[in-house]
Image 1 (cartoon, rainbow, N blue to C red):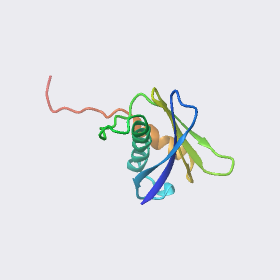
Image 2 (image 1 turned 45 degrees about the vertical axis):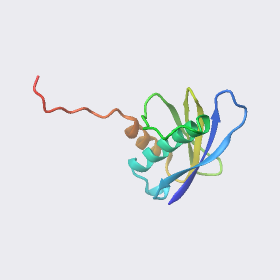
Image 3 (image 1 turned 90 degrees about the horizontal axis):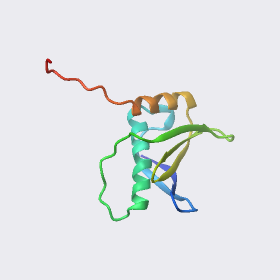
Amino acid sequence: MLNVPVDVWLRGQDYATTAAIEGVSREPRDWTDDDVRLVLEGMLRSMHRLKYPTDEPREISLRGLSWIVNPLEEGGVVIAIEITLGAAVAGPFHLDQRALETMITRVLRPAVQTSSAVH
């Protein structure tokens, strides 16, 4: 299991806190959409945990967040997200920027609702 580093800045604070996202089992170069979902959800959970340390874990909805994948001069990429609560940056990850952007886009795409009902 990998511990993915994430730096969190909560709105109204002038410092960052580093946390770890647990549960990612593959190296970034081997990631699937499920791994990317775990990282994004972990970033949001880290933010919530820092703001509300006594809350019970909640279900995560991957909507309403602003995101970008940035390359680093020294190699690799980071994922940065921003929501009303604050911002988080996870990484660095050693995988292709466009491949990661494509996976994030798929993960954040609203699920197509199917119904067997005839209207």
